[in-house]
Length: 364
Image 1 (cartoon, helix red, strand yellow):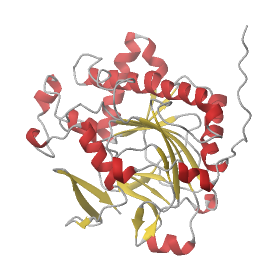
Image 2: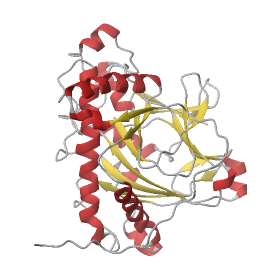
Image 3: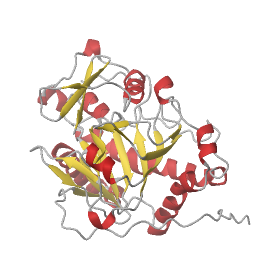
Image 4: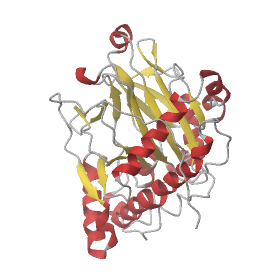
């Protein structure tokens, strides 16, 4: 019998959860253990429809990973940052602006945030095809675990959610999974992300904004919940509310691509990252994400075969003739983010840019 030994790496110890009295959003909790029965799936269809239509953010529990396995993922997530030298990071730096894709490092100070302040965030991005690029030396022994984690996100979490969403649109349940292929060309990716504390001067200049309000350009984003409070969502009433940490849960949100495909039935939620509360300042914020994007060749037009879309009508941000492909839209969004010159909107606190003929808003 073959015994697999996992590599020994340093343990990452996050900050303790905040004890401050924060105004948290009341997000739905989707229990994926219900997915195993027809009755449970029927319940989840209704719960998920309401969750995405109300806030566009929700939690997922009983997703198939234990607390111990999730802690191991956060140990792995820290390796590209704490175990790789700055010199080696430069070797694996991504070329987001040139090629419009996230692969490799997004190093600190690449994005302009606000008030002349640049970011203090490092990303290490890995395409769902995890072996299509070389990785830093310290990461290579972990690639088997990273691939297993990527497939778990894709097949055991993303695909059930997409099947439930397709059912909610009264479409065949494989409608959305078919255009989110694991082997298909596209830019679905795993991201390890580390926010580093900033100086008081930078906090003052930026208005305490670490990542300005935005919507994700993909369809579904999976964020593995971590204890440093910083993520906020904008409610339908236009109020910012904090997202609470739930141990070993996922925080899931919808993105632009789902809005376009559903004809506006499902809208993406505006979210931002701000300075943590006072009892967590001085701590880094380490995250593990899975950003799901439809296949590159998908054209972002409404799925008109949906009876729900036909009944509800289409809420358009652009005409079908102007609809980009997924590849065109994500390349434009990736290349522009934090690099383009935004224009002030008539809406208070909103800046805008066009990606092709799609108006994209950024919120402060």
